[in-house]
Amino acid sequence: MVAEAVLKADSIVKALHGAFCHDTSRQDLLQMAATRIRETGPPYTGVYMYMLHGDQLELEAFDGRPTEHTSIPVGKGICGRAVAEQQDLNVSDVNADGDYLACSIETKAELVVLIRRHDEILGQIDVDSDVLNGFTEAEERATREIADALAALL
Ligand code: SME
Image 1 (cartoon, protein in one colour):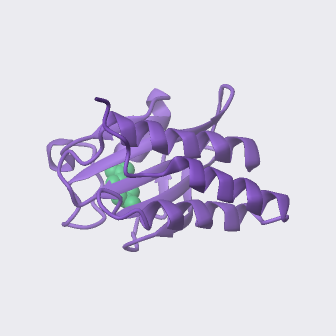
Image 2 (tube, helix red, strand yellow):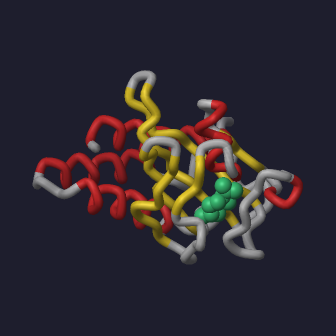
């Protein structure tokens, strides 16, 4: 049996589409996505929406613990590495990753899913987890559904 994700992407995607139809701003869509994902609870401890501006990732919305990393150059940290390598990253143990930029000592795992429109990277959904090895493939897929919806709406 394939385990279901705890993240209910369908209902969040529906809510984002609904909000989009009511002229919700980009900022509010990003905030809504962050909040709805974080409300899922463990393994989703903190959700950070970093959008790409030139060669910098800028934090445009988040839900969870605040972070000092509001601007991250491409290539730096796990977030910047995902953009440089043009791929999603699922880091099961952040303390074993030399690139990791710490936000909280409680964080154990991190999932970065790129928001892409065709070949263009618009930004990313960065999720911190207090759970070691927190993100299964099902959670990755569910997070990607939300990233893909945002790519079409932003
Ligand atoms: N841990 C990230 C930085 C972002 S904060 O955790 C929200 C990284 O290594 O790039």
